[in-house]
Amino acid sequence: MAELATRSVDLDPRSLKSLYLGGGTPSKLGQHGIPALLAGFAHRLGVDNLSTLPGNPEITIEVNPEDVTEQAVSAWAAAGVNRASLGVQSFDPAVLQWMHREHGPEDSVRAAQLLRAGGIGSLSLDLIFALPDQLERDWTRDIELALELEPDHLSLYGLTVEPKTPLGRWSARGEVAEAPEERFEAEFLAAHRALGLAGYEHYEVSNYGRPGHRAVHNSAYWSGASYLGLGPSAHGFDGRARRWNIAAYAAWSDAVAAGADPLEGSEDLSENDRLAESVYLGLRTTDGLSIRQYDAMTVTPWIERGWARVAADRLQLTPLGWLRLDALAVALTSARSRS
Image (cartoon, rainbow, N blue to C red; front, side, top):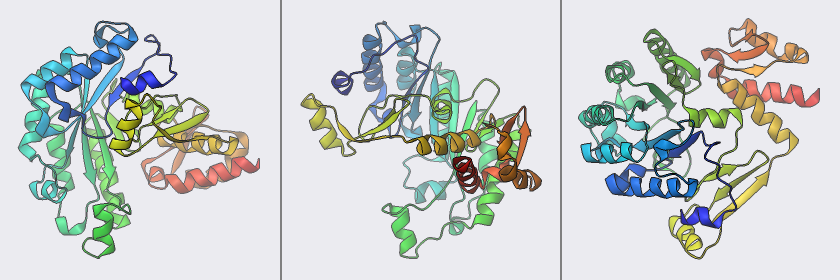
């Protein structure tokens, strides 16, 4: 709330569609910290409790399995939380140990059950696929165990090696090898088939939902909607410009305590930036991208290869196309910029 006071932001409770506590480990705030934080938001919006907001906005908290207790869930639900994103990652103990996770498979099961029983109506699970070969992870088994928990939504992310991370350093030293592209593709398609058969809609590259359970928060990003980001390293977008906060907690905290906006940087999006983003974001979802007559030369080869289809004048990538998303988005952006 202290940062919000430094920002010239007009919060209209009627326009709020989603409030998302994440990007870290918010569940560490426990049964007292989260309600206190949400009470501050409610006060700023002029309501007694977020559950009374018009339109019943999606209020999500990212949760570590080891942080979930009956008391915490009860307090979160009473404060207005109606959706939880549970960071399962895997049900394999060896994989969780390799990831330096504090929870075990049994903790994920217990946490899912407590969240359900405690009144948080929508449950999402996070899993990671395409792990290094030496872990011998059974991806099919992980999907089966996730489905046994009957989540409303799943987010599946392929592991990538990023520089300046522990995994990046291990890879640079040759201690671990990134999964080959063939296995990445095989596991991505295996999940698509299994979850489709279980009744989930693969509505975005990394996301699956039961009917009526698309993530409102994430969908806002893909539609290009504006959003407000608060906290260290948080990003925001007002429809024209993007901004990001100071990343280091101590520096961010010092700025806020001094009554200053903890802005680290911002950028105005050029016409080419907006074009590239609209193409990329549109192709990420099953809603697709509005097709234009002069796109035909670019997209016809994709359709012939089974990477895309056109429905109701919208270009939609298939799962095979999503595996080639970056290349296809660049090709279409380049073609449109020349037209």
